[in-house]
Image (cartoon, rainbow, N blue to C red; front, side, top):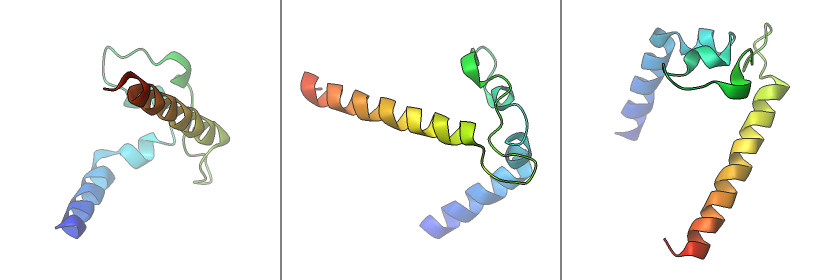
Length: 78
């Protein structure tokens, strides 16, 4: 079942234009009404198909934020 789900998700992503959009303005992938903040103009993939340094930085920032939130959750006893 998991293999089927991965294949279905991959097929959807390939048809949805997400891979192409990753090489364009990242803010364009956000839903209407969501403020792009610092994402405006950010590229995830460069012209050569390589992940950009900005994308790695964003990933690291998100990991640090999630780690902090998990620690706060444990501290608060939620």
